[in-house]
Structures are given as structure tokens and as C-alpha cells.
Amino acid sequence: MSFTTDIKQEIANVSLEKHCQRAQLAALMQLTSSLTISKGGMGLLVRSESVISCKRTMYLLKKLYDADTTLQVAKKTNLKKNNVYTIEIEKNGRMILEDLGLYSQRGLESHPSYDVIMRNCCAAAYLAGAFLAYGSCNDPHNANYHLEISLQEIEFANFIVKLISRFDMKAKTVKRRSRYVVYLKKADYVSGFLALIGAHDAMMRFEDERIARDLKNSLSRIDNCEIANVEKSIRAGQKQIANIEKIREYGKLEKLPEKLRNVAEIRTRYPEASLLELCDAYQKNYGELVSKSGMKHRLNKIESYADSLEERS
Image (cartoon, rainbow, N blue to C red; front, top):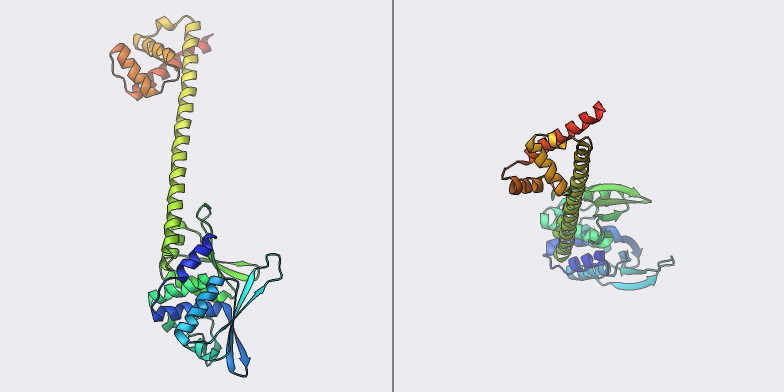
């Protein structure tokens, strides 16, 4: 199963209070249902490609309204040939939508009435319903953190963005073909959203993968930094030895001050040593404690002297 399917399966199994069940069903019905007219009155038709979403919708309709539902399954004719699940509710469609805050004297509403999502727990349940209907999330193995909900209307997309902002998460909207996608990119937001909608196991899996990836990246940066430092130290040592050899070729090495001759000797003996390692070797061989800056200063003097010899020639 995909990570998105795991998330949907988990939130579909979350036990909710009646007011939160109502909010979740409101999102599912708003995104997947349409009104129908029949001899029995105003009915509802729910279509979804997600069997999890379909089962959850049927469960909530029965739990809240004791609705009689009929389920049909058909194959799409496109290349993927996914199943399409259709739930038919022949009676009380208007009553159900009115109770869910989706229908008023003005007709169908672009979003539920405030009393449906007034409580934070109900707002979270509503967002869980929206994700069940048309949500998806990248697998945590993917470094491109991305969670989204695909919607048909820009007004509804803006409503979802505003609802998410209630929980201190900043969602954005982009138009993709004929739909409007509300998405979260920041890892903290994706993790926070999963926790909010009740997908705690998925959130822990996401966080485990994220921590492991961040640790691996940190170790790689440390390794790269150490390699760069070693390479830099080797290049510096080669240049310093070249300066010493230049002074030796001019027959001037023995005319250097004693401390510089000692540094030249240590550097020649340990061509790949770092400054700190040179300081330790210098102390062991000559009994003098020299700091890194002191060692660098003496090596710079040797370089300046080598350059002056070349200029005179």
C-alpha cells in the first residue's frame, strides 16, 4: 500500500464524537456528493475512487442518519482502469445536507456553516474528511515533503487554507489543470497536519524517515567538510615544502633563524600533517610549545623569504 493509503486507512479508523463525525461527513459529502431528484424525493449520489473514503462515508451516513444506501462498483475506461464506487441515498438527501450545514434556503453552500467546524476538534475532523476524499502525501522516503488536497472550486480551496491556518500551519494554493490544489511543503507542517487529522502512526513514520535523512545529510556534510579540510591541509603542506626546497636550492636554508630552520625540518618530515599536528611534533622534537597561529606565522615567514629569493634572481 502507498503512504497515502496508509494515512487514509488510519484516519478512517479513528473513533470520533458525534459532533466530529458530523464535521467529517460534511467534508466527505461536500467533495464527493451531488443531489438527485427521484420519486422518493431529493436524494444523494456519492462517487469516489477511494474504497476507504467510500466505506467511511457509508459508515457515517448509517451512524448519524440511519440512511439506507446502495453501493455500486464500476471500472473507469481510462488507462488506469481504477474502480469507481457509487453510493446512492434515495431519500432525505436535503435533510442530510441541511444538518451538515451544506444546504440552506439559498441552496448548496460553498462551505459548511460555522457551527459544524466551530470546535477545533471538529475542524480537524473536517480536514481529515477532506483528506480522505481527495488528499495525498508523498512517501516519507522522498526528500520532497508534500501533502495536498485537490479541490474543484477556488472558494472552497481558500476555505481549506483558512481552516488549516487556525492550527498555525501555512498552506498554499495552486491551480493544476481544472482543479485547485491546497498543499503543504514544509516538513513541520506535513507532520503537524498528519497529527492533527489523527494519523499518528503515519506521522511517526514520517518523522522517523525525516530524522534519519537529516542525520545522514548532517554526517555527509561533516564528512565532506573533513575531506575538504584534509585536502586543504595537503595542498598547504605541498606549497610549504616547495618553498623550503626553493630555499634549499639557493643554499640559504642554513642561514634561516634557528626557529624557522626547525619549522622547515618538521614540515619536511611530516608533509601531510595539519598545523596542529606540526605543533605537537615541534614540541616533541624541540621542547617548545608553539600555537597554531605561531606555526602559521613562521611558515608564512619561510614563504616570504622564498619569494624574495626568487625576486632577486
